[in-house]
Length: 294
Image (cartoon, rainbow, N blue to C red; front, side):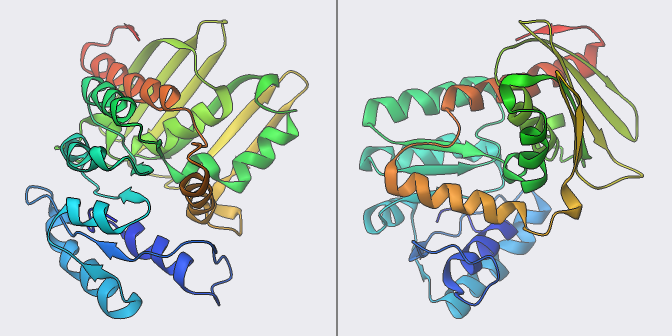
């Protein structure tokens, strides 16, 4: 594990190590980790020490002094650093080892970096996966099943909290969770995004090449839960993520373990790169008020 400045580090490790956890995920453990951290992000700077200490003391994780040491000693690698700006440089340090790599959201905060990560992975034969846990919410999965699967979806309206972190532009910090839910429902193929913004809310409207429309709404006041209305050809199903018993991050860890075993990503990297470009286009549109082509 590389980058110990997010609660995902301890939450994922607990799921993997604690056999008594109600949502325990068998098949892997966290053996070695590098703390990292971003000094210009307060949440990173103030939490990396505590998370590192807990991993070492409570779960017996060996703490090392470089990403390369993690890559040398681990069978597969999770880049958990919360700062999307550092994912490409961290990946550059470990790609040559050719081991499966999961990069937590966002894959990058620029589409150029996302494309560079894909190219590096291909050059070194690295199985690569990235994404938000919200896409794997059981509530979203049940709503999709209720409309007959993703092939039957004609549109989706997704919402979630959207705090802003200056170092991670616009949608990239927390809005990505809602955009990932949107893509879980709609699939790839968005061609144009139009965004609106106020002090308390963001809205991004995506137009798909087949004429479908998908909406992502980010809230900074009022409702701080995640949810979606998924529209199918025969009806609409609502997904209330917060009301679902199984934590969505447990479902993500299950996918990560499967990926580390098989090298097959649950989401194609090309879809993840389109999500990065969607948010980049939404950020441009929220500044200009004009539609932006992907």
